Each structure stands twice: as C-alpha cells, then as structure tokens.
Amino acid sequence: MADDSRFPLQRVAVELERAIDDLFEVRDVTLGIPQQPDVIRLRGRLLAPSHKAYPQIAKRLRGMDYTAVLRHDPDSDQDVLLATPGVMPQESGSRPWLNILLFVLTILSTLFVGATWSDQVPPTADTLWILKHLWLGWPFALSLMLILTGHELGHYFAGRYYRVPVSLPYFVPLPVPPLGTMGAVILMKGRSVNRRQMLTVGLAGPLVGFVIAVPILLLGLGLSSVQPMTAPEPGTMVFLEGNSLLYLLFKFTVFGQILPGSGSLASLPGALSQIGAALFGTFPIDSGYDVFVHPVALAGWAGLLVTGLNLLPLGQLDGGHILYSLVGQRARMLTWPVIGLLVLMGIFLWSGWYVWAALLFLFGRTHPEPLDDVTRLDLPRKVLAITMLVIFVLIFTPLPMRVIVGELPPSDLGQAANCLGAPALVLGAIAWFVWKVRAGRPTQPRPKLPPQ
Image 1 (cartoon, helix red, strand yellow):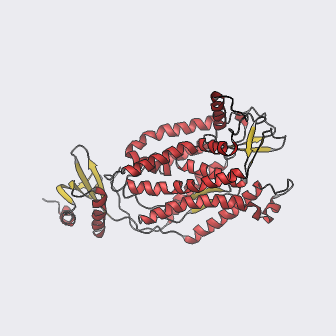
Image 2 (cartoon, helix red, strand yellow):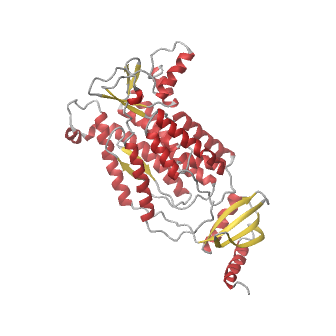
C-alpha cells in the first residue's frame, strides 16, 4: 500500500521544481531526510551564480512558506537545495523603551566612572561628592560611548542594509571602574544568508569602533604626560592599563619611547625586551617611565581593548563570524587551541581569561552555517577579512589590566589584583540576560533547519 502521507509532499516538490526551473536544474528529488521527514531535497545544478540565484530561489520558496538552504555536495559535484517548512522572522521584535533606558543608564554609569578618573576630583572626595559632580566625567563618557555606540550601530545598519532582523543595541551599565559598562549586545534572529553577508554584518561593528577609537586614543595621548613610575604607597592602589602592539606603537609615535620602559633605546634586543615586558606585565613598577593617561586616552584604549575581545576568532563573536566567512567549517579547528590558550593566559596573566574560556566553551564551540553556503567571499572581501584579523593581532591585549596594591611587593606580580577579575564574572550574567531577552520575545514560527 502506498504511503498516502507522502502525496502532499510530492505535490509540493513538483510545485517547487516548477517555481525555480529557470534557476535550478533538478536531477533528482528526495522526500524527507533523516530526522526531518518533511524536508524536500533537490539535487542538480544552479543555472546562475549562487549569489544571484539564491535570493530569487529563497524569495519564491518563502512565498510557499518554505526556507531555502543551499549547499554543494563535493562527492557528486552537485548543488543541493533543501526546502524546509516554515520561514525566518522578518522583524527583530526590539523593545525600544528598554534599549533607551539601558543607554541612558550606561551614560550615567560612564559619567560616574569618568568623574572618578578626573584629576579635578579632590583626594578626600566621597561617592556623594562625585555624584554631585558627574559632569567632570564627560570627556571619558563621551569618548567611550562614541566608540561603543559606533561599534553597535555598525552592526545594526549593516544588518538593516541586508534586511536582517536585528535589534537595537542593549547597553550594559556597570558603575564601577575602570569602564562603567560591560559594553552592549545586538540580537539577530535567524541565520546569515551567505558568507558575504556574514562578513559584512560581523565586520561592520569592530571596523567602525576601531576607526573611531584610533583618533580618540591619539587625541587622548596628546593630552597625557610621561612621568616616572613609583610603587604605590601603603593603602593605595595603582591602575595599570594593558598594552597591545598597536597601543605601544601609538605611544612610541606620540612620545618617542617605549612605554612603559626605561626611557632609552640602546639596542634592538633591548627594545624587544621592553616590548615583551610591556605586553606581558613583567616590567618593574618602581622604576622607568610610563604614560599617565588622560581620561580621553583611557576611553580610546578601552575601545581598542573591547574591539580586540570582540575579534577573538571563535564562536559567534565578531572574530568568529569573520573567520568562518573566510574558511568555513575549518574555523572549528581553532576552537580547542583558542580555549586552551585562554586558560593558560588565565593561569599566568589575567584571571578574567578563565571567564572568557568558560563562556566560549559553553557558547562558542559551534557556528551556524549560512543558508547559502555555496557563495564564497570575492577577493576584495577576503582582503578585508584578513585585514581585520591582522588588526586583531595588533590590538589584542594579553594582560588587559592590573591593579597593584601598595602593601604587596612590586615584584610579586602573581599576587597583584586583577582589575576586571571579579567584574568579568558579570559576562556570565550578560549571557543569561541575552538568552532571556531572546527567549522571552514573541516570534513568528521558525523553521527547523537541517542539522549542521
């Protein structure tokens, strides 16, 4: 006896073939795939370049309440079109009142922290005094919020350009030094259409943030001064911002010396030694020279730090999107090496890396494939992707920051307090917050896409 339940699916398959016969030459049809009996698989050959054919195929299938997934089978050298029941949501479902509220709270939070960095605050000032003089923090707050807002709006407008359902930025206020915020997140529903779109949306944020952060940092360094380093007195603390290769280069450009450092460049080996000490925090804090950064410079430095963290080439971080768009599933080969390296850096450099390693272990070991994984990056986009990975190497900060407590011996770096060791735990709460916002928002029915 024939399986009557398959007759409607056969009729749909025939309709699908007719709908796309000018774009896809069908050679065989399969009704159902393992674990998804309602998926229709068509194998054959695209009749137009994939980046032109897929949007038209997807539009026609959407009109039939199906989502198109395009792959290439290297064994048979055929293109594979999977028609999955259901369609992706077209609206992000943002809650503007919540976005605005968090944005205003983050402005106030960064104003508060910026005021604490101001040299106009008297040593005896308490929290109430700072709250009454929040305006003192405007150079830091304005600079940092320009960078973070630019980063998030880069993602937002790139997503809107491709008609991707993206939310407005959700800023995360955290009114404690050194930044006053844990950044912001944007929620995107569904998968990227192809690697080109994935690259553009993933790259736009860090690229815009980087372009804004560089002039702010250079301006701030021009307002900063070089002074001798001294060990903190008992009962006091010294904040030390971390160094990246680019940050060291900018300080060398502005001040003509490697900072922190001895103030002299006697030889190339000596210069390389000072660079290594600056990167990994092995320089003595009771001798030599360093930049005492202006709040604007601190905001620019923070912009580079945040951009570097977002460019970590793993999972659904911006760097993970960029790497996947470049090499596809081969990006997974870096998963365990990167997580392992973060754990090692947590042991020897900064305890906050433990949190990053844990979050990437939980959420960053996979990356969703685009709907059209046949379309690859063209040469200009490959150059752009590689350029951003090079920028990541230049701005990555192995030891993001430290606070040296006066009672500790200066050379006992292993006991030095890590400035964001505890606040970094908030990242876990942020991940929970993102999940709750995503899960709590009503959405259109979404298709169950084939497993990756």
